[in-house]
Length: 288
Image (cartoon, rainbow, N blue to C red; front, side, top):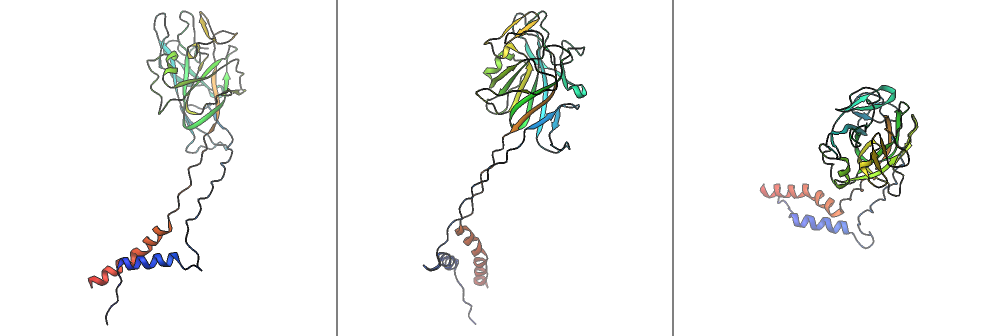
C-alpha cells in the first residue's frame, strides 16, 4: 500500500489556514498584556543594631531570613595632615548591646566617650571624625536614625547619600570635603538627636534613594555652607560642641518597583512548535 506523505511546507500551510479560520470562525489575536497591579505599600524596614556583627537582616517577626541585608563599615579621619583636612582611614565597629554601635578609631581608642561615634577637635578641628558606611542590598529611601546613647554629650550627625553611578569608590585616603566630587550628595545635618527616639532624615525638597549612605558625627567638611570649625567646636548651625553617640537603629523603605510583565509568545510561534513533531514524522517516512 502506497504511503501518503506531506512536505513540511504543506503541513505549515495547513496549520496557518486552520489558525486563520473562516470568516464565521473569527481570527487569532495576541492576548492583551495585563496591567501589573499596583505594588503593596510596604511598611518601612527597621534595622535594630543591638547585636554584634557587621551585617543584619530585617524581618517583622524578628526571625532571621535571607535578603534585606544591611552591612556597615566604620571609618574615621585619622590620617593626620597638618593644617588641612585629615584623610579617611578604616576604623572598627564596636557593639554595646542595647546601646547600639560605636566606632573605635586609630587615634582615640576605646575609652569613654571616645568608644562611641565621636570626633575630638582639641588640636586639629578636622581630625578623628567617625563615620559609618551603610550598604543596603537594594535601593532604599532612608527615613530615620535612632541613637541609643549619648552620655549627656551633644549628639548631632551628618548624612550623605551616594548618587553616582555604580558602586562608590573607596573612602580610604580621601577627605570628607572631596566626597561631593565623587558621587556623594549631602542629605542633611541633624541636631540634638534624642536617645531612643527616631530622628527623621531625608525630608528635604530632594528625597534621596540609594544603596549607600554615609553617616558621621556633625561634619563641617561635608558642606561648607553655614558650617564652621574651631578648637573644641564644630557646628553647621547655632550650637557647637563635640558630639558623641551610639547608633541604635536605622529605618527606610525599599524600592518596590515591580519587574515588567512577560511578553506573550505570538500564536504563530505556538503553531510552529506544534508542527515540529509532524515535520519529524514526515522526514522519517521519506527515509523509510
